[in-house]
Length: 346
Image (cartoon, rainbow, N blue to C red):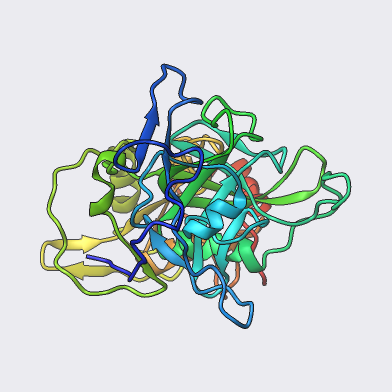
């Protein structure tokens, strides 16, 4: 199990003024999700070292602050270690990943569907007006979220009252659990500038505030442990495996980018890759004209912007040409969508 040493004593003076009850926890009971809140006395957390730097990312739940914990302001969030930056909406580093984000209404392109969030990266805003005035760079915290996607690192999501969403609290900030960065791409935002967008999906089977002390986190490293066993249900898009199987068989399980054919004990292996991704907001179709047969390496590179396909079917990001079978028609609009939304540095 992941663990990190924590100071367990409450601060002098007892509970903060919003957290008043016998055992240190309280939940406002209401049918309105905006009002459902758990207040816990904030315990000091090392948010900054003596030299002013912030410690490395801490992935997972922060012990003592379960899903539903509420905070008056960004200072309380930082002191608790739930979101260590007092201003930035993304916490983490480009080389280790992002460990938390805050949805507080700062970017007009954010979309919040509860268990699914389309989050806008940082940068490009006028500091005085808050308006988007330039393209967003793929660096720092934007790269940190992409790193978390590539390595399947969980991201804590905090919603603030300034975020215009029925899923946001009516006051302060609320920790709403762990999400995975399922996808990321570049898109043109409402203001006409290029922004980075991230699709976050809430992890299933998360403990709630009644089981908070069983949760843990780790600072930038993974500690070997025996994995707990539990039955879970995962909601995901069910793909038409018949379509994917037909494309793989058409290419005899050879990668359309490199020609590699992997042979296991049970037979050949290849992966189906969707040119225009399935699910919101891309809404690609699970049809043969949107499916490629790829080896695992090129599938990962294709999904994460390392390789894309030019108009003449040459590969961008590596040498080579996409192989196309005479009976396999590729939707050119989907290829264009991929080029426009998933940047590759040639």
